[in-house]
Image 1 (tube, rainbow, N blue to C red):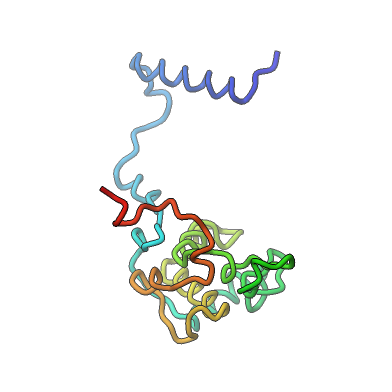
Image 2 (tube, rainbow, N blue to C red):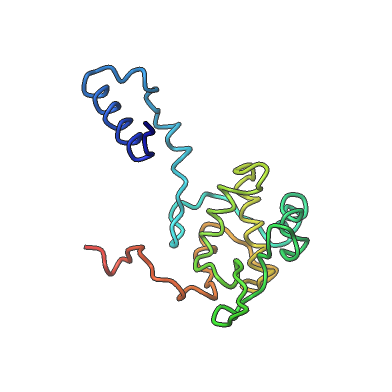
Amino acid sequence: MSMSKLGLMALWTATTFTLAISGNAQDLGQVVSESDLAKWDISIGPDGVGLPAGSGSAAEGETVWLEQCSACHGEKGKGGPAGDLVGGIGTLTRPDHVKTVGSFWPYSTTLYDYVRRAMPYYAPGSLADDEVYAVVAYLLSQNEIISDSAVMDATSLPEVEMPNADGFISYWPSPETEN
């Protein structure tokens, strides 16, 4: 008799709950310290809350890009095996649309969050905060969203207006809707 994933999840949940209330939960792991938990509290919202200290320019980003990103995404963000990240602005309503960072993503802070967590592919999370700001500045400048001389940091990055900012329904509460 095979057990479905849902059944296994229910069994695991019931067992965990039973162990926890019976006082035998010590075999399930260890208590997480506040400092260990803080390492995983890395969410960044559209308003920039959660962005770390640091900064980076497009020129600095080009150096990091060539060393860490170009093998997968091409020398200028186009033509690599992992797909284009540059171009496509204004194409989303056409049948031949091109979804890139510049054409599709609604928030510049999402780009920072994603690069910080998931890139480079072979070593996710290995870039320093300044390197992430630099790569983000490079991509935004390659998409002609910011100037080549702009510097991105926790203050300037959330101010970047992405071309598709109004292309999504936001579930992030705004100050006007919070009570």
